Image 1 (cartoon, rainbow, N blue to C red):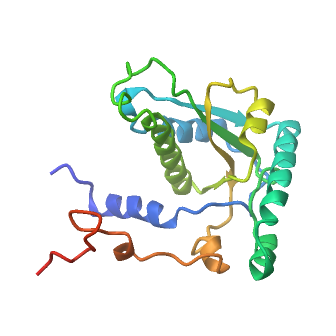
Image 2: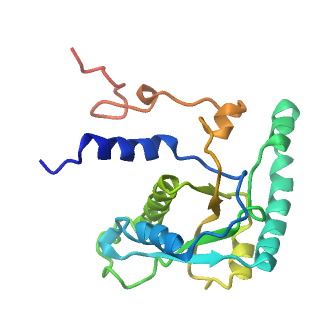
Length: 222
């Protein structure tokens, strides 16, 4: 069999289990370039439809650029906050939703879904698989970062077109995600949104179906 050793498997599952969306507690120390390139190489190893590898990574260390993105976040967060009321609005105000300026490095991932790379294999019926491929690269990066003690936080409260303009991303490219990234002293035992009571985690059996979507898991079991 080509399976890993029990110790190697444990390491893989540990990285999956302990991956966190980190937005606070960043060290100001820069990531060594060798480490950064190793993490990005892991992302670049992700599966992609037709081997098109549509992801493009914009590494951002400039304080001036990060301040512009932070301003975009503040505008978007202010608007989102208004959609909540009462206890939910109060809880929203206490959440840490970004580390744009406190993390030493930001990363923007965009998708070149019109690239001829891959010769359109697999995209005729599902063109959105190019975008899914870029998300697979992000997950690779997230797990590799966790194994290296590097925190990665997805900042989704942004006007993506404004961010693209700040970063000079070609209009045709799709914005996928913006991340704060850096060393952290520790990783939380559970996701922040779960810890503060924003939402409860679903059980595995809550999302499983048997054979067809209308058959609950176990319905066909003896």
